[in-house]
Image 1: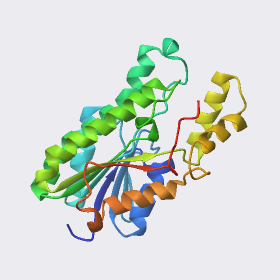
Image 2: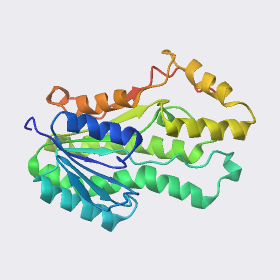
Image 3: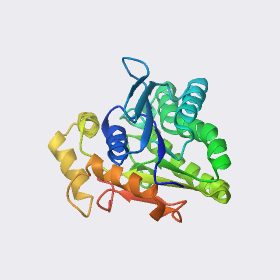
Image 4: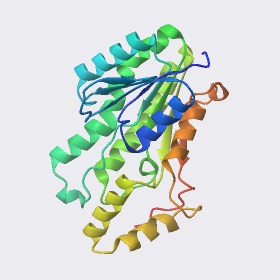
Length: 253
């Protein structure tokens, strides 16, 4: 694999995904991202291309991957960042529509992109797939069962693909962010506090006190791990589940 990476990232117009995209752009790589909401459809600026894609729609994902391969001449790195928080409520209150939506975005999208990208990487005989899971994929997560189920399943998908694709010199790893600073985590805490009838400060303290390092993770720290896993230094790192979370010792609830 050359030093130039041709990078595909889902859900990368904001939050962690945008931070990851910016990190690769800062290194001079070609980056093609998608998101569910892109006002101007497909736009290009320098090494960045942005497409509006519903990652649960097989035809849209297939078209996005084909366009990216054509425009960049190949795909070296796939980062599956798409996911949604899902409902915050006891399991008996979770409706089937919300359950299926959470798994469709958080799990099905990872399968769909791999389904279309794997043949490209096999032809190249090289590539890197990074699936963004969560510490919720390593611990139980009460009141967030659809989200936890999706994130646990992403880890199973990752380990299976690492075995399946290793012979083609393709690495597959899962990165598990913990509590990441930003608007998304703020909303998660607000919903949990409301569900449990406690304050947001109380919930925030629980999250932090469950970690060895007593602060939230920065989005740039997730991006740094993705950069490493896609580098030549990590060509023998595959099938791994790597938490970037300050060492979660125990779930807070």
